[in-house]
Picture 1: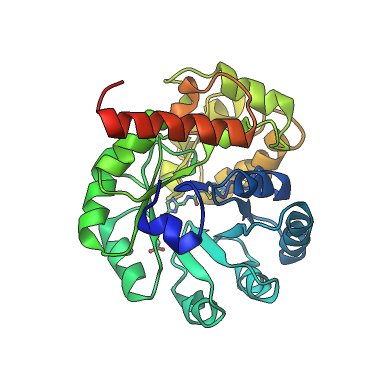
Picture 2: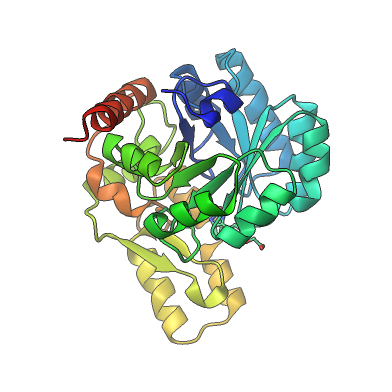
Length: 310
Ligand code: TUI
């Protein structure tokens, strides 16, 4: 399937992998790119040196291009912005902020820049700043979220800009991909489903919690701090929400959140850690390789788009 996005990124399928902190390491990124999508290493909250090592490890696994997602609240975002240039990365997506100040240097280096946006105003601003495409990410997504749903956000962003739009949030199968294309998107970003990819170096406890999750099992914490985060309900989210209700301060809440994602993804503590996942987790019930996932999703999407029936 060809869209302006597949042309822009020179990929076979219009599927971009979410830049998930801790989860999106070089093995996952290389596997998604090898399977014909655009894999990404998620910088998350990691130091620039860690990101550089991940990039180098990814290059050893594949000759295909993969990108880097830069979470802009990372204290080392400025250094990571330089690392992607030095390492010859061709695609950068950004999250949780405005990447405007890096845009000129990235464009100069020939990098395709794809900011994640949560509103049409932000999409327009990014287009003016030189973005090559945008990811319109709805609040069905896991992790840090905006306030609009994918269904409402995507067509409004599509109308607001003329660059390609990538839909994200709540997409994990061919039906979601077909629906996103119907809304005017030219590609999709998929996160939650790739967490349970066979290649994903994620603790088995995390994968199992996600595989068992039902549609109503995610919760949004951090509304009061201005950093809303969607994750699967557990002791951690209950405690966080209780503290928020009691009016706990920003510092106390941030302290509770700090390191909690790593605790779940790497150490497998899915009770006290943060198990970020999107609302579509309920649809995902088995581990598959990235290639199996991508081929199954694209086959289903193409059948729906060609025939208009399920
Ligand atoms: O960034 C994400 N998802 C993330 S980042 C993350 S790491 C983290 N861990 C704990 C607390 C906070 C973050 C986990 N998941 N998605 C992309 C995204 N970006 N969603 C929403 C936005 C966004 C929101 C507001 C982008 C820009 C924006 O406004 C920009 C501005 O500053 O004007």
